[in-house]
Length: 456
Image 1 (cartoon, rainbow, N blue to C red):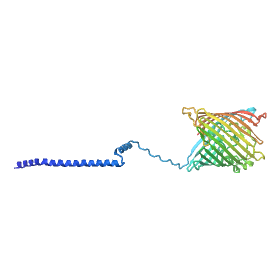
Image 2: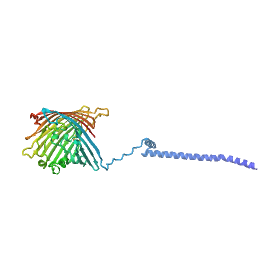
Image 3: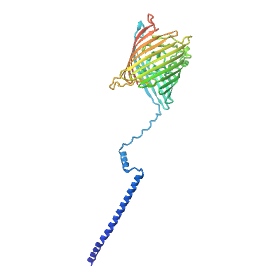
């Protein structure tokens, strides 16, 4: 019985299986058809969206993303440099060793002639900036085994164009005088700058610079040494009430590859009580070098009440060539009735760098020359030749101080920017000069000079 029942069940299952499978197959086919229809509908919608909108296609986005991933990371932004909240300090200085020789013309027995040598300058100083636009500078000269203050001032930058200075500093006398001794083309400046006693003085000045124009003006008293009364001379120290007003104007345009400099200055000084009670004034000059104290030309001692002076400046720089010259007039009004002599000085100079450098110029004055091929880096340094005619006349209105005409040459070797060696020669022709033993006051002398210099 059981076997018949099992057999009957198998037969029933076999008969119903094909019908079930057919139904399942129909259901799957229907589902696939529905999916195809939905996909077709979605594709149509995407096509419509592409045609009616600016949505970027997925492919470019992927490319941009890949490019961004491949690019190196961007550098972090550099923070803005903040102004220092503390004063800055910079040490500087210079050393100049000089040797010289002045011929003993016409039997002159002055023992200061012949060979001489000296430490011309030994300066050390500090300068820096103080937050808020302020600055300072203090410089001492230790030559001659004594301490002398050269510069000592506080400055203020009121704007990009306007600056103020209070203290001891130069009072805008001339291009030669305002140029640092580190950058001169000769060992000494033109004769009139020493003869007319140009010096730094204590005062308040303003400097305005805009484009090619530079204007400088100030009110000054006297040199720190004369204001301190260290020398003990009558009329100095607290008795010194001298006062001066000084101004200078410079026009310095570029003319193609050339730099032009045109300048003029005016000065008025009232010696006040110094005229009667202070040291008398002598206008005089050394013979082209500082190592000798001999003065072949000199005025007698004068009681000068006022000084009025004017100067003209001109210079041209083009490549390795430069030319420059100045004219300067000084009127000295004395306490002697009817005696107001007019003195004159001036020079004309030309120079050339055989090694191709250009003479430095900045801010209305000569500046450092940058050596193209310095020693220590396979080069020879810079070599410059300069020629100058220098004229000084200290005789006028009954005052006989003499005249000097100088024919001068210098050879300057700059092995690197901060080292200089100078050789100078000058033939000086005098009239109304220091008398010889025979009474002759017109004669000539030969002068030789050499300098070794370093600055930092």
